[in-house]
Image 1 (tube, helix red, strand yellow):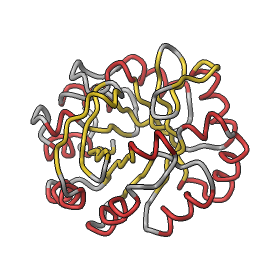
Image 2: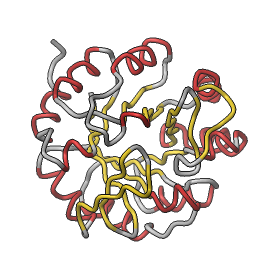
Image 3: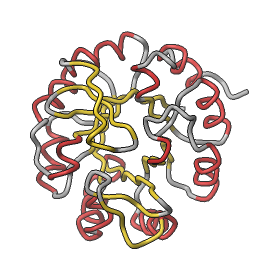
Image 4: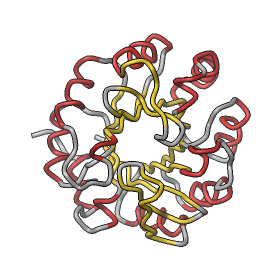
Amino acid sequence: MQIFPAIDLKDKQVVRLTQGDYGKVEVYGQDPAAAARSFAAQGAKYLHVVDLDGAKDGALSNFDAVSAIIAATGMFVEVGGGIRNMETVRRYLDAGASRVILGTAAVTDPDFTAQAVAEYGAKIAVGADLKDGKVAIKGWLETSEDTWQVFFDRMQALGVQTIICTDISRDGAMRGTNRELYKRLAEQYSMDIIASGGVSSLEDIQALKAAGVAGAIIGKAYYTGAIDLAQAVALGEGASQ
């Protein structure tokens, strides 16, 4: 199972939000590229980067910081936040991103999503951030009309290969991840499911791996010291029990 340490960017700083609340911001670093190098030094091969400012307004105010992160290591870097047109997709891929994540646009603009998947295939992932049974959009400030099941069915039909799924109620809360949800998703869909939100222990990682989840994103648990990243990577890469 792939382990993705997370770098969330706001005002070009490394931050974490609690349950997607922009009023609950904790700053963990001033140098995003240095954070990426630290992750690589601990054995991480994958990195999850989110432009929180872009998720709200669709602008690319953190593009230079993301580019610096990509240039800092040879890691597989997936990037999300404010990617709502083909020009932005191409900019990030041209900058060296391994994969871009469509969030709000995957809900509001299915034609764009279909075009991106048709053109770039596995380099396009979709972010599904779940709140009260619906998919949250625009930096988690609004929710879609459809249930998450309808959304997942639609994305699989479009040919999406990877979905990064966040249970917002668990995100940053350090209460453990929603193991039952991710097990159900891994069993129900042929897409790779990457679990995000509340991954706060090695036990969470072991349970997700046993459930057949393709990857797990570690955010606040790393920054607070609750999870040792090197141990998490070794557990993710090791043979299943």
